[in-house]
Image 1 (cartoon, helix red, strand yellow):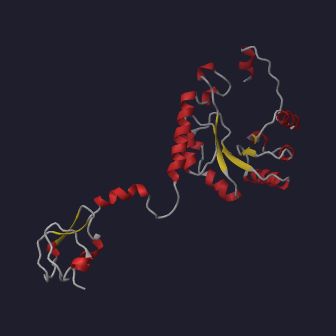
Image 2: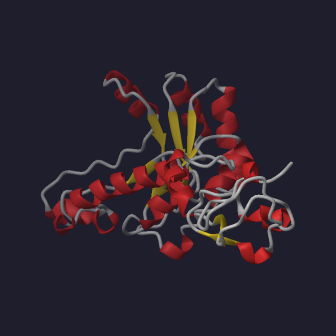
Image 3: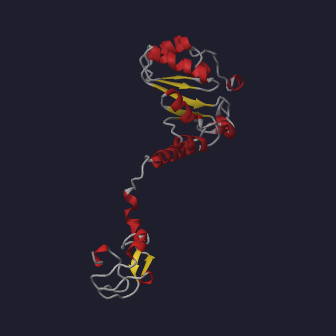
Length: 253
């Protein structure tokens, strides 16, 4: 990174994110703070950031379970009420087969906290998958052009890719829906394509219905197929024409 900056004629100051940086950001009105993976073990810094009263996002790259727990406890004990974790693999870029996205719901369950993804993989696949696993925030590096060869350009998204990421993650979130067996209203029009019971012969009133008098066919305007065997042997109280959907009303009580 520094070599690239020197070639571009940029003066670089290596300054850590510390208390003085927090003070500067406060003077600029920063609405929230990100504790990067490299700083998650800096508990005094976390306490200092909590004093701002702003929401905090913490990345978990390289952190052990104990270190994550210590960081969360430190923030909460200091009074942080708005905290979010980002599952993170601190590799740049991160190999797709090591993205370990199942850790997202595991973190949420383990620590009782909302979880997102700090994504350093190439492309958008991991981010979209993360949303399907419960990620509520996606952090992704962005560049106007990878051809500019910035320090993180290799794993950054260009504008058209970022637009696709926004659309695809929104669709993934919308597709999650909710648990339960209640059928969506959009299926209502498809019920007619289910099988149901129809009379396939013309029968007179008083006739005893035989199996060959009925069939389980489409459309779904008759009784459900589960009643087929129950209806065999029952007598009709009215005559029925061939092609009539079967209903309980045509049978004797």
